[in-house]
Image (cartoon, rainbow, N blue to C red; front, side, top):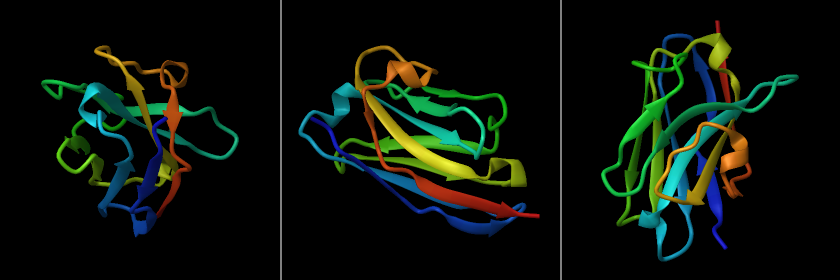
Length: 124
């Protein structure tokens, strides 16, 4: 069983930055693909970014490419999402997700473990 705990959300003005963190339990963190999703009120959960195990290849949604950056620290069992140039439309609850896999998925159904989420609000 893997437990994921997100932190770092908050209120920020448009154009600002936030760094989300996700702490994972377990001794095989490096074997998991890690991802961030977000969900705004009344909308479906959507893919934001993912990072593979091994070489740490990254994958981004078009809406956040060049503004967000996902990274992982296997020694600390942590994954991060650096969010720059934030826009009001980035406001959502952000979730960390994981799966024991060599593949990288972009759908919520691909992932087995989820955190409780952290709220990000971007004011205009």
